[in-house]
Amino acid sequence: MDNAPLFDRDAALERLDGDAELLDEVVGIYREDAPQILGNLETAISARDARTAEREAHSLKGSSANIGAIRLQQASLIAEKTAHQDPVDWSSLEAQLPGLKSLLQETVGVLAKAS
Amino acid sequence: MSNPGQLERVRILIVDDERTNLAILESALRPEGYEVVCAQSGAAACEAARTLPPQLVLLDIRLPDEDGFEVLEALQRLPGMQFVPVILLSGVEDLSAKLRGFALGAVDYIVKPFYREEVKARVRLHLKLSLATNALIAEQTRRLQTLQDAQSRMLVRPENLPAAKFQVFWQPIQEAGGDFYEVLELAPGIHAYFIADVSGHDLGTSLVASAAQALLHQNLGPFNSPRETMQMANKSLVQWLPEGHFLSSTLIVVNRNLKTASIINAGHLPCIYLPVSRPAEVLSVRGDLLGVFPDAEFIPQELSISTGDRLMLFTDGLVESAVNDGWEDNLGRLREAAESLRSEPLGSFVAKIRQIMDNGSSTDDTLILALEI
Image (cartoon, rainbow over all chains, first blue to last red; front, side, top):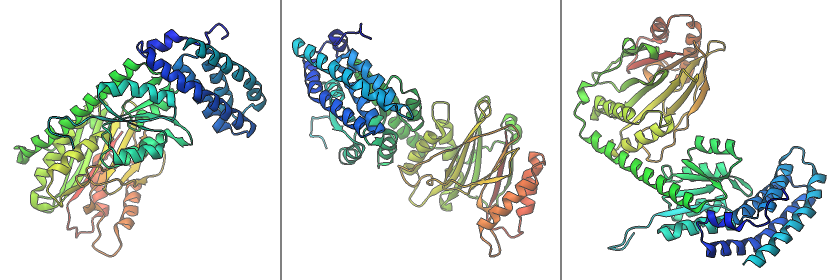
């Protein structure tokens, strides 16, 4: 997983058939929305709200996939799966949070440089 | 309405709560010339579909705070939305969700993250298919209007189609009674059984019966589910039948290969189910009549069946009563009769059912169609 790129611009561009302008627009939306989604995930974890936690992790996974933020996509998939378990392993989810936060920070850093 | 010299634009409704998804889907569709309407919740989607009816819907199956499938059903229930294709947006891992979506009438799915070219291609394909379906309905309606062979209609007899394993008792009271049936082999091991009662006698039952049979022939097949068959037939009948005419009917499609039966009751009497290993039951799910509402809904009841199980369809002559007890009581008697005759061969089964239920003063046609798995 650590071998996957933080931001696979080429793959994302291929999906958008090379439209760099659109990718920039989507990245812009992502930089606004992703921190908020992660914040919602954190809130849901503190509230022990499994349904919301799963949904927010799913959102983070989906939007990360859209822009090619592969490592964050993979990490949020693990969080989504953890939140889907019954019963939910809350300590595992809590333990995943710092990793998700630093990944998001790194990803946004790379995105800022790339645009 | 469009202005002179301007084509009316094709409108697409996108339902997704994810802004990055919306941006990508919009960017794929708008430059192609589509009018795009976005909704971020099921409620907003239904509102949009009501005020700005779309020709195609892209629907995320994972919406916050609601079940995407409920949204799908709610959209399909809206007037005019029944034949609007819905393409699901889903993750690769959601196989069971996709299958459930197909069962509910979605036409396709697009996996996330989206490839813009794929989005365009699938949207184009399903708009073409939808156009072709609507043209087909119009064409079928036109052909019905020129139907010439109304009087030469042939009824299939059990000996014509032994693999369908059915028997019929039919006693028309009036010259041109309102009841008719049809049995069709769709493929080896797959048969359709249809029974109907036509209301509004002045038009000539045989003409309506021929029309309904022609529509069944045209629409039944492995590509159309029983529900879609009934929807298509209904659309044509609504356009073709004069005001005040309609059919109550039941369609059963039995797949002996897969041991399944789909039953659609369109405003008809219940049918009797006589499983080999359990007591007889009355299956009384009722849907809309055929030929009244263009957007009528036909929800199938699905049964897992076993060899030797029997199903019995009938019209109201069998359960109507000369005395005071209503047909509900007679339905109970009919179930008991079926139960007591379960070891009879199918032919004498229908004949003896008739004997038991006969009150000697029936004023209506009586039609019984029984089939065995």
